[in-house]
Length: 72
Length: 72
Image (cartoon, rainbow over all chains, first blue to last red; front, side, top):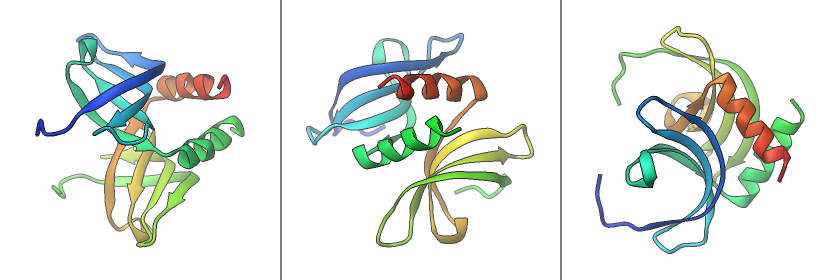
């Protein structure tokens, strides 16, 4: 993975799962490259030293997600 | 992207956003390679002909996500 980017985990909201190797699927609030923070759903290695694939959500997208899941 | 996989969108739960080019961020229930279906949060091109990055969630992970967001 290219290393010419930065990230800061501003808030750890929830750990959705953890596998035998210590990788966790997490919902966090993350700032990428010092840009405004977004909601971030992603796999992380132990101690957040490695990151896996994931998806970011804007505030509007997160609100839409929240609305959808609370109606299920 | 490799084409030696199959997918079937079993249920379209919610469209979280749509950009000017018609790409949508969607929450769906998807079966990948004819395996048991999972929740899937992903960017899709118009008519689901192209897919972008995304993340899948097991039932347990989705329940954990639901619990987290409903408490926010």
